[in-house]
Amino acid sequence: MSDSGYDGPLRGERPAIELVNTRFADRGGVLVDGLADPGAVPPFLRAVLPDHDGPPPHLGALLALRGTVTSVLRASLAGTPLDSTAIAALNRTASRCPTSPLVVLTADGVPTAHVEHHGPRADVPLVRFAADAIDLLTGPARATLRACVAPGCVLLFLKDHPRRTWCSPACGNRARQARHYTRHRRAQPDRVPSTAQAASPGATRTSAGDEASIPEYRANVRAYDGV
Ligand SMILES: [Zn+2]
Image 1 (cartoon, rainbow, N blue to C red):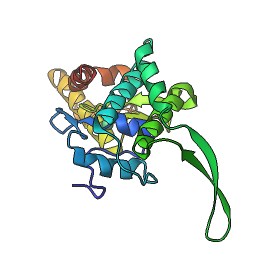
Image 2: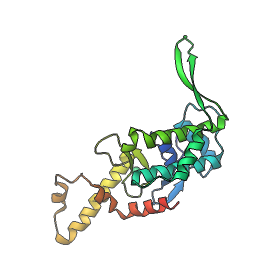
Image 3: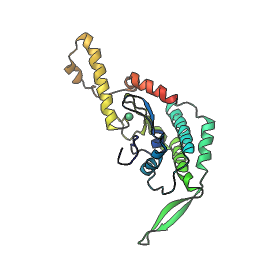
Image 4: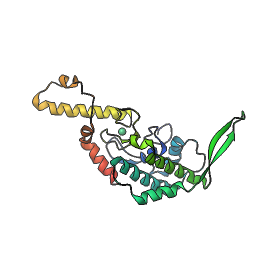
């Protein structure tokens, strides 16, 4: 059990991405639903929407929204047409709790801005996930949305560094180890010294083609898309 009480991966990404990432691959490459246990929802919400102090949303509604957000973000990543039914579902969810600006005075009398949601408090997380997904789809962050290229990983992230292709340092290490292993095996028949490979200036570089050639990655993406 993690400190948060939620056992799935948490990458400090935006809420909509963290929601999509609640379906992840374990160390064996098997897809896991981090929200399969309803008891995982409250700690997940505390981790990604820490200022939500209301009840958790209906699990079925949350899982349905996750499916919708996953489909539109994956389509955006793939550059394929967005499904109009999914977009309509996203818009419907976002409209459940209309918002208005609210000013709140601190104990010292300092005015601070808040957003008031009007509607069932349990629906507020749904609205916030949906609104974040809409902003991701339509704002500048869309251009930085990526899928992790580490073997077996299916998580999404926002690329905040020009050379970042992994959701986490751990995935970066696994990807480097996988490439090293692949290079070593390819080098064996020709008896190319591994030290020469390791000393290559391009040893730690990668390309989309190299990453996509990792069988486990392709298999997991296919399995993920089929969920
Ligand atoms: Zn990853």
